[in-house]
Length: 226
Image (tube, rainbow, N blue to C red; front, side, top):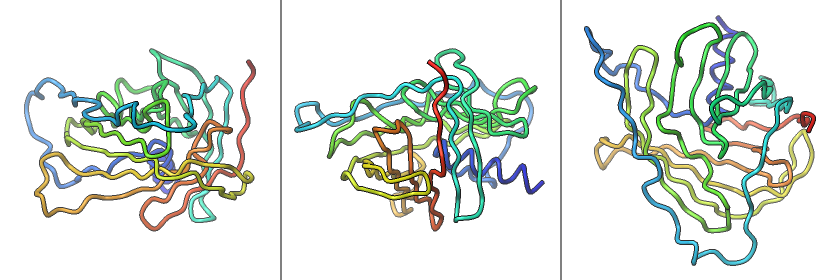
């Protein structure tokens, strides 16, 4: 049970999952047709870009990333295949997460099961390429669990600054990106949740994340064969 819980936690950290309200009604009888979010709903005008821009990275089958949360809990992800335009990352223990070619989060799967344990539809658009300092974008997606419970979520992102950060894997120049998340139908007074992401263009992936009171850092990574 502990190992499976750890895998789910790391899946959310690497994929930037939102939190599903476990008290939401699960419904009964026949499930309605699955909902789909609107995807990107706003993005900075390209005319606002000045200076350097950073393009989308390309991951490869065989890429491996190891993260540590809170200096103690480690998890390793390996890109095992590219299916329907999505990277499939093996977390071990029969768990997989998937990210689209833009590194948007698509959800969590269990090997041998039909359909996802949890999905983001169409995707939590974690990055909107190319990136530049000051760029902002907002997306809407449906966060759906296997039993059919759905939450319509709105995630907003802003590239705040380029920081030089040191993590166990080394020192990187990393774009600091703020992520704000809320339920689309939440009351106006309900606060958003926030996450900080440090994306290193030279590595092509996140090297640090601050999620709540936990710091997640890159321990090591290696690229698969070309």
